[in-house]
Length: 324
Ligand code: MN
Ligand code: MN
Image (cartoon, rainbow, N blue to C red):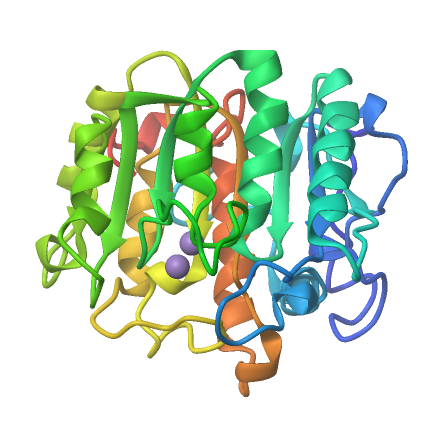
């Protein structure tokens, strides 16, 4: 543990100061020494309404300063078990969507060549496509836990095959997903036709509409999701707009009637035990986030992702119950 990178503590440097990395980790450009790499993907050329997710990585890192290393609820201590660090941002091309997508894919290939588990800070949801391309090269088609207000399975948007509303359609086209091991949770609101959700169902995805989540704990749902996803590799992709705009207003395409913050915690914590090979948290747009709540929530959910990665030990686990 001693030589694992650790977040800078609030008694060593005030939390309003120090490094601008995620959780004030040391930061590194050498992923070969890591188990987990936190990487910023500052890209929003795929947005359809309000842009600004290019500032997401910076906003999430900024609001991550208060997060402490030990999870009081689950007793997970990710920095005890794994070498986790912030490897900075991918140099996207602000003038070229497709070049940016190629750069993201190449950067992920490089990260994955060192055997690290990548945790991406978006960026709009387009970025999951090049990420899944690189992931599938290593792991084959993966299972997916996708939290979102939208299924993101449009064929094209404004004639474009690559946009933030199309990544999972492309991922199916390219054989990157294991359809029966995909769950889309929190989808809702208005569409163009029933097919906006039913196309997913025809691929074998489990689609959990937000209405099925209202007024209840999602811990029982996650028991079913773990059973559905089984033992193979799993990717977690969380679009912050899966949460209700009351909890996460700072995003490009908000929809009412969404998940609560405790439900988002239940979903991520309910992924413990799955063979998670990568995660992302996308669509945080700080310009609409006047209180910082969205980025604060996003930062904590990224921390919760770290807490459920394979190999993370829990301190004092004799007192744990299975579902915490
Ligand atoms: Mn999305
Ligand atoms: Mn969305």
